Image (cartoon, rainbow, N blue to C red; front, side):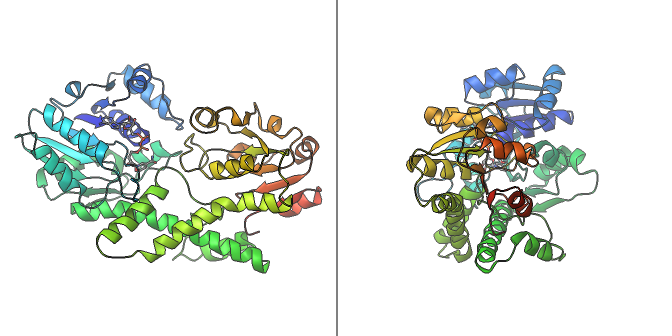
Length: 433
Ligand code: NAD
């Protein structure tokens, strides 16, 4: 099939590459010229395991190309995916300006029947808005389908090629058939393609992210109670996770959720509810808990040093909002580092992939960037573990202790065993352990 993908961010680039991998001919469009130049050279601008290799292969075989020009992608395409950003507006609603702009531009360049797919996470009713925006521009026939994306950054290729389910919202038999053909290769093991109406498909994506965010905030509150009563959240987690109704995944206490999706999607659901005269009380609490949780580790650090942080230096391990990505959008690291800097402390960071992102878009030269995890520790007054990259899991603790000016570990992800560290002479702070 001939496919166009609009937007080459985490979702568009992965979707385009995976559709090419299954034999389709894909043209990806982005308004960012620099990005398109790099992609054309086979250079992936984000860190996503396995993506570069897959992209290079499909570029080499001529199944995927990149352009800034819609006119090179839309005429002759059978399906167009809209995968541009939908950031939070000031009132928490999803800002649809990029989606609608893309829709109008697609409409200007289409030459015949087209299936237009909302792949971006968009509020209920967006498919209809996209339809209206296009109808004002073109007389050609088209169907607008809602096909939300559930991939996880850091495991995006696997998620896309082997999805738990594919959700397709469309009332058009013609569009459904096109979508079934396209996704057929990815669901051969029997995972379902779920057909539903567009509004339900749109809400499904938000409901999934809101549920996952709720699990995180719920476990963080359990962790906070654990700290107060002397229980261990890791034991409680195992105790409840073995209940099949609960399940063991996504139950880890930590520093709160971040990233480009959960924060904005939770806000968007609250906003959609309010627009319809309903107050989504649980999700308001989920947000409040998350904001407090992001500050928790900094508050622990402050308390340990009785508020005297000026002039001290801290080693921070991990910047990205979770491991295996360089994405720092809404990352807890931002809150912790900001707190330390505001209190007059100095910060030396190490992250396997996100340091360039941090230097360019966040702290620039206000913090120091280390070459290795151990290099970050030299002379620091404490180690602050923020993102649980694998390489941080089993350090040589004797060497860690020798490097630190003071043997204190603030473990924001509970990856270190308290008993072992205390035996070695560290002061250890975890989250609810
Ligand atoms: P992103 O910000 O990484 O990328 C968006 C891209 O769209 C940018 O490269 C931008 O230049 C481009 N763009 C903007 N306007 C354009 C236009 N008119 N024409 C062509 N290109 C344009 O975004 P992302 O993380 O890939 O997310 C995209 C959507 O997918 C969002 O709605 C997001 O909520 C959703 N989503 C994201 C994830 C994720 O893990 N990142 C997962 C599932 C769903």
